[in-house]
Length: 217
Length: 217
Image (cartoon, rainbow over all chains, first blue to last red; front, side, top):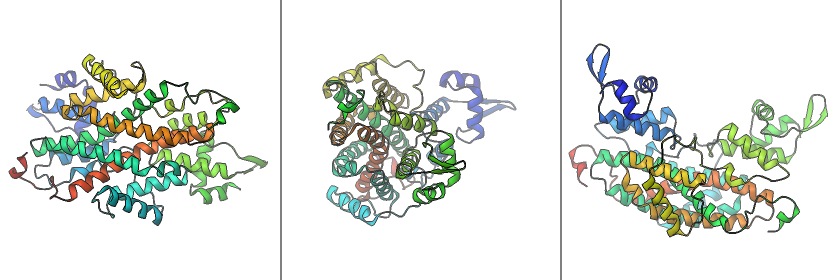
């Protein structure tokens, strides 16, 4: 199909398609003349993937470029877990020194949960960092329930693993891992809010009342 | 304390502090002369909150402005759940019409889980949207495990609720809800990766091998 049809099939404007082509997010089409290229269903799929990682996924164009470059690598020398490390909000790790007590907390958590994640890996550092930030903000009460949150995260990871094991080929599994991790985070966050709305729907909303009556615990 | 001390205490540069003051994210200090203001520990705390919502939280300056404006509202007429609706990656809902089958899927999910979330609420629409995007990308296998993911999200929501109920005052509960929701999403996403790294550490890494041998399921 031509670029105008690709635009119709994907719902992405031709200007944006040309931008993705220039930025290396979308592979070039097959040139059929000096100013015309031919695109396939693979291009439609790739455009959907880019849009999903951008919008519900919340990733940046440059993160998406590294992801699709790795997905297109025929030698598959990358580790897809690394591509999605840290999630949408993940900037560089804060330069703050981690609190040694937090490191010990996370280390014993991984032991209790039977996780074999390396202590020097980015996932471990990220959990430590987030717990330190929560404490710094005076939200130790969330940190006190770390085991409960970890238990739920472990169940989610187990389901992820079963789903990914059901993918028959390596490229499909790599894309499934990326999409399932990035959009899965958004889905879990949406389900968590949906569950909470449901739970707080029965009694009167706890936060909309003003005044002193609200200070009862 | 003066702005230079506030900068030292919070680790935020004076230029950035002035920017937050101009943008209305940080309340003004008490003016002690025409060009000097006095800041308190509340300002240090507010700066930590802004930085955390920006960096691990992944929120934009304008989202944070609405959050702190609401937190500072003495009448507390807002619903804190709304402030964090959708999570970091949440843009405006896609203009795509939702698939009626997906709506039915989510409706029966909420019934099975005993959630009383309204079908016309933003959380419901968000879950429907994400499931539609997953299907559009050919990742129906994740959607097939929706009940497992929802079960885990429900446990997380129940822990959230217990933690928030333990906050004694309404302002503390509102800030706890915002911080716990935004940073909690990042924490859960980090724990999910930590658990997965741990799970995949035992056998040989499944993705780094190249070639045809990888196509076995």
